[in-house]
Amino acid sequence: MMLNLELNINKETYQVSAYPGERLFTILRRLGFSSVKFGDEHGKSGSDTVLMDGKPVNSYLLLAAQAEGHEIETIEMMGEHPHQGWKETRGLHILQQEFVKTGAIQCGYCTPAQILAAKELLSREPDPTEEQVRDAISGVLCRCTGYKKPVEAVLRAAARLRGVEVPPIEDPIEVPPEWINSPFDDSIPQEKTVQSIDGTTLTAEKVITTLKVSTKPEDWQQVGKPKVKVDAVKLVQGKPAFVADFEHRDMLYAKVLFSPHAHALIKSIRTEKALEIPGVAAVLTHKDLPRVIYSTAGQSDPIPGPLDCFSLDNKVRFVGDRVAFVAAESEEIAERATKEIEVEYELLDPIFDSRDSMKPGAPVIHDEKEYVNFADSDPERNLAAEIRIDIGDLEQGFKDADHIFEAEYEVPKVQPAHIEPHAVVTYWDEDDRLVIRTSTQVPFHVRG
Image (cartoon, rainbow, N blue to C red; front, top):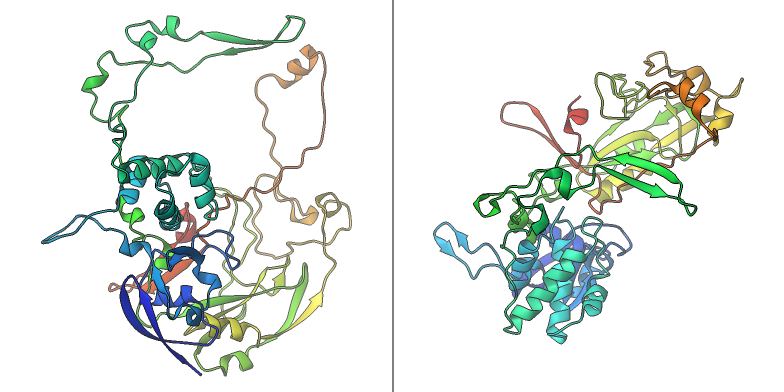
């Protein structure tokens, strides 16, 4: 059963149909409000923030039906570029202007939500303290800026809205006067030392970077002068700039069936029930794809790591490994279809400690015949790489050392914790080329 709803969004009325459990976030995105971003399912990131009756709410946690009878506001209502060809607009809101000027926008994924939260604050507190600003935007996670610049932007905007003049940002960055017309040797010490309590020298570090300061900074065109980020105006309006913001007509949605087991062989996999669901376009397993092996590690050339991965394989090697792909007319249908795939596993002994993995007789994780070694890797010992880097005369260094410390170091994985989720949109273009738009910093890996 569908619900017929009347929603007031940005002072306009929309007649929409929604499922009983459909979220306001989904409706807003369907209507084209790309400024409302998905960050997580629990409202912790805050990138899905909108104003409802002037108060910040998480649109992903709100049912569309709950928004009926309320006024919803997104950043699309606040302001837009002042010059649009023949059309002149009222321009960006002062908050948006200051986010652009102060450099408060880096990736820009959380920017619309931060600005909406700041707008609500200024509506009830026109002269906020820094603590109040930080509290107001604390519900919107930002992993790029460290909040310093967004806080500065809100405080400057608050002052301007009160009619208070704020200092310009366009002035050149000041250089310490002692650096001007001063020889390099006089301005920066060539050697700096760190001493222990008893006065003995622990380290002596040479300065190897040469610093040259122009005597006429006023003549510089770019260096030393604040510049607006090239895409700041686009991002501050919440324009479609991220992968999930782009849609195509009749686009299908993909979901992945993940392995519940750490180590297992796929004995059989049945997809008939999933394919019978209306709206399911395709279900792919390892039987449907060519065995093209690739690496998921590193960014070097010619080979970034051992070639040890397939898009889909008849073996799973960790909890969450890929088992099957589903493409359907909606995310909900695709998700439902993954639950109808029947998989029979032959469980293998798992490995949970890297030390155990290299012991004789340990289960071999990568036993595929297509495996390609890298940097003395050894799949028989579950060793991905063995790299030794010596700098200088190591043996002489040991001889000269007062103490030699040997230890085993465990380095954890690093996750940048970006708010934008991993996403990809693919389509065939007018020249019959497969175009892949994805959230990655290494597009050549995707292309390869």
